[in-house]
Image 1 (cartoon, rainbow, N blue to C red):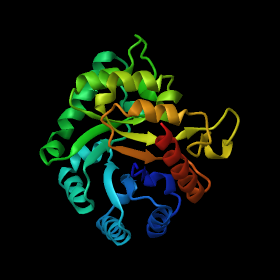
Image 2: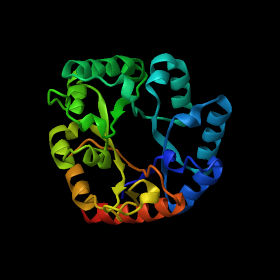
Image 3: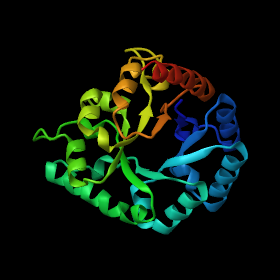
Image 4: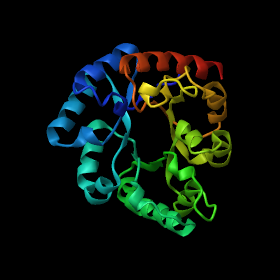
Length: 255
């Protein structure tokens, strides 16, 4: 059975990290995925490392900002060693940094590849995590995600399936064409139209419109090693974590 992971950003509103990690361990999670706020200072990293160890949890993947990856290499590598990371993902760039041409996005992919070189040299995987904007065509009809992958032939991809759908893409098509690049998957769900407005339109896995059973079948042929639960704004993280794990285990088992 797959060891599902949990993106800790989903519980960012709970300031007690130890409480969140304990909750996840009690529910049966074995893996978590980190995000930027957890590395703000050495004390936070130490607390994260200590709590992971005490609870028998692992952090094989984590998100780091582009600025941190480019400018604080030694710090990132130190964190990676401390928590036992295997793969690093850059998760986002702001609108002001987004190119508007195929060449610009391809150059951005090449930049990512260059930034990732020292991490790959250290034995880590390195990749990009998508949102929806990478699937919005440029004014010339180019899909940014295609250009990013073209500009960085060795770049791994953490495919956030729900964001692909939100961006107007067909996740099955992307899985078929680029499954060899997908090393991790964000498992999240989209609420039916008009529902879960207080949760920004997201749903617990299995409670929304995303066909996860069919997606798990499609993902069997990819390079994906990690399946990470995420909800961008749950009003009850414990409920989200519990119901999503139960649903994902059932759906993946039946796929």
